[in-house]
Length: 249
Length: 332
Image (cartoon, rainbow over all chains, first blue to last red; front, side, top):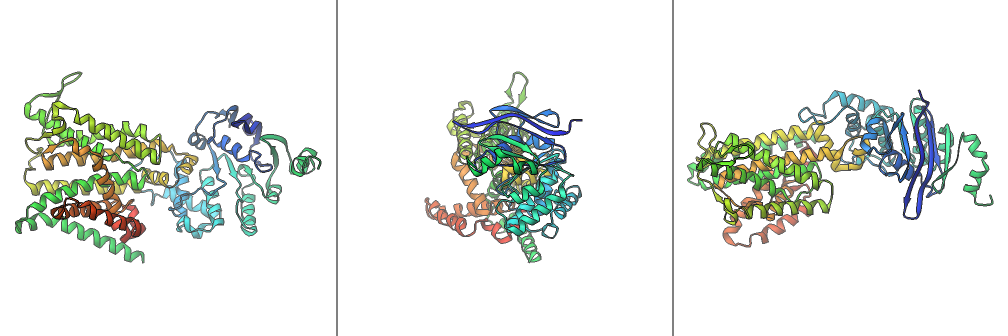
C-alpha cells in the first residue's frame, strides 16, 4: 500500500496572466499533518480549492488514495473522503450546532433521497453528531443555533463538520483565522489530539501553530513550492529565509 | 416559552381547522353558499402556495414561474375532459390515450404531467441561481402561456369550458360542499406530506442548500440533484392545485398561466410566511379575501394590498403566520 494518500503533480491555475499556482507538486503522507505556508498571495487558498475540487486546474493531475480525481466535482471528492474547512466560516447559520454536524454525518451515510422518516430524531445521525461535538468541545452548545455561537465556537463547529464526514484527508484552510490567542490555543490543542489519527493538510498564517503541529511543511511562493521539509529544516532553509525576509535576507 | 409557542401554534391550527370544516354547513344555514365557492378557491390557491413554499421557503429557489405548473395541471384536466365528452382520443399515436372525466385518472395525470414539466424547466433553470433563476423560470412560464394561447384546437385565447366536474367515485363533485371537502382533504394531505418531507433527510438537505449550498457540496451532497427533485415535487403539487382549479371554475384558459398568477402565488407565500408550511394557507386566505371584498369597492384593490404587503415585508418578515410561531413554524 502506497504511504502517500494524496499526490498532486504539476498543478497550475492561472487568472489571466497571473499564475496563482504554478506547476505545484505535493505529496501528503498518510497520518501526517502537512502545512502549507507562504507570504500573502502565494496561492495557498487556490491550491486548497484545486485539491477540494471547487476550482478546476488548468494543468496537472491529482491522485487521491490511488485514484485520479483531477476531473471529479467537489461532492464526489468529498464522498471519497476528502473533507475541507473554509477560511471564512462556512456553516449553516440557522441550524443548531447539532443539526450542522448531523448534516455532515448524513453526507457520509449514503444518499439522502429519504423522504419520510424524520432526520431530527434519527439516532443514526444524532448519536455520532453528539460524539463529534463532544470531541471538539461543543457538547453543551449542541442546541444553540449556529449564528448565536461565538466566532471561536463557529470555527470549532466548522472543524466538527469536516470531522463528522470521517475524512481520509482533511483540508483545513486557516483554521485559526480571526481567532484570539486563547481560542487559537484551544484550536491547536484540539488539532493536536487529532494528530496521528487523521491526515491533515492545513494552510495557516500562525507560525507558532504551524511549527507546533506540522510534521512537514511546504513553502509556497508565487504559486511554486520552493521547499518541502520538516519544521526544523524549513526553519534554517536559506531559500525560505530569502522568500520571507526579502531578496537579500 | 417553548411550551407557550407550541400551544399558540396548536391553537391557531385547531381554530383554523374548525373554521374550515364548519364552513359549508354554516354557510348553507346562513344561505351564503357563495362562501363555499370562495373558500374552495382559497384552498386551491393555498395548495399551490404551499407547493411553491417548498422550493422557495425551504429550498431557497425563488421561482417566478409557478403558474406554469398550475396552468398545465388545469389544462390536463380540461383536455382530458374535452375528449372524454367527445369520446375521442387525446393522442392516437404511438399509443392511444382516451379522454376521461375520472378524477382519479385525470388529477393524477395532471400532477404527473406538471412534475414532468417541472423536471424539464428545473433541469435547465437550476443551472442558474439568484436573479437569473427568477428570470428564467418567468421566461419558461411565459413560454407555456403562449403555448396554450396558440392551442386553437382547445380554444386558444378563449380557453376551454368543462362540460361538468370530474367524477370521483360515488362523490358528486358538482355539489359545492363535496368539492370543497375534497379540496380541503387534499390540502391537508399535502400539508402532512410536506411536513414529513421537510423534516426528513431529504428535507434537511434541501434546507441546508438554502442556507449554504457551497458547504453542502463540500460535505459531499450533489446539491443540483436534490434541488431538482424538490422542484419536481413542488411542480406536482401545483399541478394538482391546477386540476382542482379547472374543476372549481369548470373552465380553463391561458389566464391561469399568466405571469401575474405566479406573482399572486408568490405574494401569498410571502404574506403568510416564507419557510413555513401553514403560512401560505393563511397568505392565500388573506390575499383572496382582500381581493374579494376590496374589489367590490374598487377595481384598483391592489392599491390597498400593496401597502399591506410592504408592511408585512418590513415589520413581520416571517409573514403573518411565521411571526406568530417563530422558528417552530419551520418544521411544519
